[in-house]
Amino acid sequence: MLKKNHLAKETHHKSWYFLVTLFLGFWLLFTVDMLGISQSEIVSSDRICGAIAIVASFFALRGGAFSPWVIGFTGVYLQLAPMLFWAKDSSAYLNDTVSGILLILFSLIFPGIKGVMDEDKGQIPKGWSYNPSSWVQRFPILVFGTIGWFAARLMCAYQLGYIDYIWDPFFVDGTEKVISSDISKSFPLPDAGLGALAYSLEVLLGLKGRTARWRTMPWLVVGFSFLVVPLGLVSIVLVILQPLIVGAWCSLCLLAAFCMLLMCMLTLDEVVAVTQLLITAYKEGHLVRTFFKGTYPEGVSDDLAAEKFPPSLKEFLVEMVRGVTFQPYLIGCTLLGIFFMLSPFLFQFEG
Image (cartoon, rainbow, N blue to C red; front, side, top):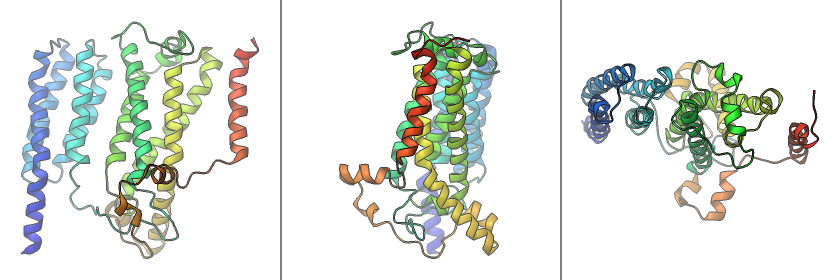
C-alpha cells in the first residue's frame, strides 16, 4: 500500500511537466498564423506536430509509458523541420527549434523514465577516487555545448538567408567563405544547422540523469558519448580542411570545434566508467539488462563531495577537470599541428 501511494504521489508530481508539453502543442497549432508564417510546408508541419504533442500529452497525463518518447521525438523533428524545408522566415526557425527543445526537456529530460533506475547514491565506481557523473564534472560540458549551439545557430541563420553578413573577428570574411563553400553546399541540409541540432542534443543529454547515471543509465551515457566523441573528431577534420580546400579560416567554426574538442576530453572519464561496468556485466551474463535498466555493482561508494554542493570556487575548478591531464608531449604535438595548419598563410605557400 505504501509503495502504491508513493508511486501515485510521484506520478502526480511529474504530471505538470506534461501540462507544459500540452501547452506547447497548442502553441504550435496556433502561432504559425500569429507569426505570419506563410510557407505551406512549415505551417502543415507545425500543426501536425502540435496535434501529436497534444494527443501524446493527454496520454502521458494518464500514465502512458511511450507517450513521453513520442513527444521527445516530435521535438527532435521540430528542430530539423526548418532545415528540411529551408524555412524562409527566421521566426519559423526560431519557433520550431525552441519549441522542439522545450518539448524534449519537459517530456524526457526533467521527468524520470518509467522503469529506469535513477538515484543519488553509490556514485563513485570501484577503484575510482571521484564521481565521473557529478554535476561539477558535467557543468563545463553543458557550458561548452551551449556556446557551440549559439555559434552554430548564427552560421545557420546565414546559410538559410536570414542575415546577409556574418561577423568574423579575426579572418574578415573567412566565415562567409567557409560556410558558403562548395563543401558546405554539398550537404542536403545546412551543415551549421545540423551542428546546432547536435549541440542541443548534447546539452539536453548532459542534463539528463542524476549523479550516478554512469551505472543507472549506461544507455544514456553511451548515446551521449556517440554524439560528443565522433562529432568532435569530425569537427577537427573539417577544421583541418578549411585552409587546405576552402583556402580560408572561420572564427565561429574554430570556436565551435574548440568547444567540441574540450567536450570530448571531459566526457571520456564517464565513458570509461560505463565501459568498465558493461564489461563486468557481460562477464556476469546480464549485459542487456544492465545497459537498459542500470545496476548497483559491488564496490561502489557514495560521493561525499556531493554533500558539500555547491563547493568553493577552488574546489569547483579542481573537481571540474578531475581525470584530465596535460602531458608535455601532447601539448607540443598540438602546437606543432597548429603551426603546420597556419604555415601556408604565414609563409604564403602556393601550389
